[in-house]
Image (tube, rainbow over the protein chains, first blue to last red):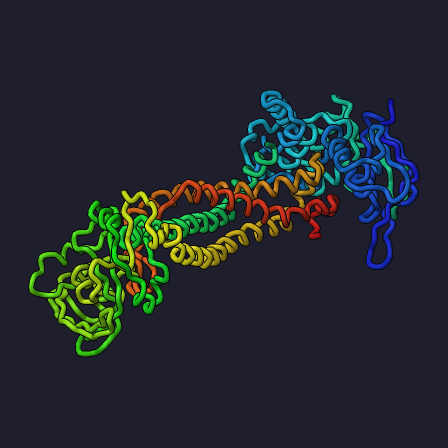
Length: 234
Length: 389
């Protein structure tokens, strides 16, 4: 399996008042294609910061982070936007759907940025919505959806462009147990069928049950990195 | 194209906020066009009336003649040459003789200017024909403003006293044979129109005139010592007044416009605060910061375009109606010293509308861009969390 993310001696510090807060300290990690991995740890342990840097939404203070062979610290705004648009999919805790767009338009958005022809766009969007079981909600607005449906739309939006890497920040935090398992099964299926790499930031045990690899973070450091056997739905 | 598409979706999806913005901006748009239309309509009406009632296609003045200096009337008169008399007979020129006089309406003395004009002339719209065929009495014609100021009407008698060219005082009792209504105060207030021949006799200036009004047929030529003054010269004062009116009006509609633009500016500033998550999501999904700035800027432009469409929707019938019924000027405005009709009919030129459209679109785009620039400095990870930055 090829390594698609390589993290070497990553440190991230944020200015706080007159001082600095170290969110990540000397992280060394590598991820191969098709992993279903989670960063687990308490609040403030650096999970989201790590995801943001891998997603080229933030840059390292020290060290090197290479995503699909591109050093995120050296990318221009345009190049990092292109990396996110072409190869990365984001799933957020609060779904972050555009409230004025329909479900179809929300999912279509990433493809609009790729200038894909309308007919191809339409097919890809409907396929993605079929995949998450929401084809009948294509004309609905996000406000008309339940929490689980909203997160499934977010997954469809992330997967519609067939990204190599999906970054999911607490994707089940706002969902009940049934919806959480539904979402996780959808993502697991995506991981298996398309060999998409999934990286989660989570402290939800339901999520941990699906992971193949768990990286424990504490105070910005990796304290444990272990391969696990996914158990799935209890 | 993408920015336009997204901007349209965003602002149509914003509902009432969008409607309020475009309503305010469209109101400013319509008022600007209407106000400029009124000024342009007034300008055209004032120029037309001044040409038709006072200056014709131009005037021939004697050296030293100054219409605003009554003392210049004493010396600025000369006999008409044969050539000029020929042109007068062909109705290419109309001679006018001026002098100062005193009048005694209701027994009170007041200054006035006597103007002699051929009753049969047709170059000016003054109804001088009323001065014809009034044998046995001294006919006089006055304007509405003069009639109101001296409290006289048709048929009333008015005592006039003047000095002839030798300095001898004389007086007569004239009969007001008509009161004409015109928008040009400079041929009305403080002026009494008499038959030219009668005034020549009164002043002992046979065959003389102070100035000549040129008609459409007038072709010019060497008229020395008379100097030709064209319309651009004679209308320069009026043009200056119109310009100053435009300037004053621009302040008013500028304020209105600023209020409308402030609404857009406020909306954009608020949007950038309220839509932090959306901005962060745009960036996470692969937009550059400047592409997001583009969306927010284009939103302002789309506001202005929608405002123009809305303005056209209710403004077109409204402005057309106002151009038909006109705008009644307040009664006091006829004494302002410039030509103002009792009712001004706005004129909306293509240039005015085109300029206003461009102004509204550009200004709305600029006021949207100013707050939107901040997006370029936003931290996307904080934006995704909805943190106010």
